[in-house]
Length: 532
Length: 101
Image 1 (cartoon, rainbow over the protein chains, first blue to last red):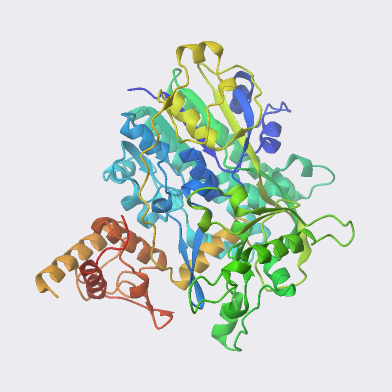
Image 2 (image 1 turned 90 degrees about the vertical axis):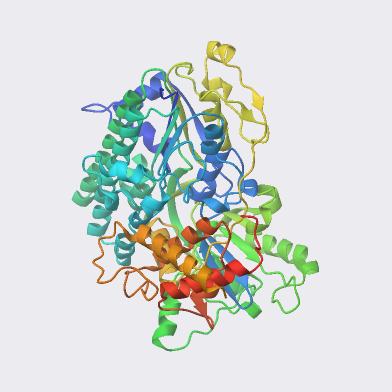
């Protein structure tokens, strides 16, 4: 068996950075192998999901479906229950549609999927290998497939699950005061971590040669959130401090290492393999904080709950979750990463919120109010786009989406804190997600040097199935970007629309989270820049 | 409740917990059993409790409503014994299933 298709995910990768890293400079490009892929392969920008966020975007990439159909909108899923809201984590069981790992597997293609979010718990009928992302090390064994995989991984020299997996505790500590030293350590933390994922991918590619081999490196996103100032080529002019230069050097070390991993994985996959690289979203700089719940309070849509003057009350006030007076709140933002507003509708007797017949009028008033939030100096809209959910999340899962999706003028994530002013400049630029990520193809049958028009993230799933020799399911929303392939290849391997997917389990109620776990997860999100 | 069935559920819960903690490096004075406490004895953090819930739901191929076990009178419980977990699972298994998984 040989690897037919190698997919390398780079969370948050953007051409803004990659074009700089492949450019000729003294001593050669930072990423010389990626430079070769740029020259000899095909490239295009890749439009992310309407909210360009890791959970919906990676799940779209893995399913060929948009969030309104696959149903994963955020890291955290909230359920309103009476007078409070309970928060749970999304997991693979929340995905309502079939992934390419299952589609390929049930048609006889062996797969390996490493470090992709929302792949835990793994499917029972997996044909191949899976080690999930976003899972603490203590639970990697149970969430890896097949059941003996974890013990096999332990035989890989220098395998260290604590380095490999998400370390909630470290990240929780790191956020408390993100000093210069903390930030530097944060970057250093990801060097050995990516090496762990590389070793597993390299081992499986060489020893097992699954036909569809996929690994995701998420350090790109992590570094860019915390160290955008040192990575963005547009920020590298003028007099740079010694710390700035050291941080930049460290970040470039990360990308240099990543380049070597890509080169070695391509070599391990063999010359017959088609290689694809993609990100779930791009990156850019955010320069201001927008406190959306504070604004909703000002406009009378939301009321904060009085916090008792006790230790517990102060702890509650400091927690990452909005502490709201539900009886007097009709619209609020649940999580910063959602960039959305939920309207509370009383659908059953005894429930609080607006009457169902008021919904349209309230929503339209809210849209107009949001559009009127402007920069007092320039008159520019702070929220450049306000999307109604039926416009951006059509599908069976639409009702789990926020009622409104907001796009801020600097693409930042909103803050949900009870703090003023509503809009405040940041002390220094921070990294945030941009809707345009990257999509690259390289190898036999790929159109050399092609610059293809922007594609949609769901197209990646269709492309990977096509590359591994399978039909594209009829119910896929993604399509194969034919311009990435040579005419000869398309002639010999025509794109074929096949049977629709078989669906996925829809049972999706995970158990409630204890408060400390909520804090851990929110701490993680804060580290990543989703929180103020 | 059928004591034989409850014993069987407890055996399953203990087996899953044993499997879950095998790499954690815990030095247990006694084998995992009915009286074992998740937090005090096994150093469970909340994320570990969630993973245990997922593992049990997968084993029994249904949702088991763990929020009712984890929350009492609006507050989260501070610890649970494996007997309490097994008892909750057993009670839920007696109820008609409410989800397709």
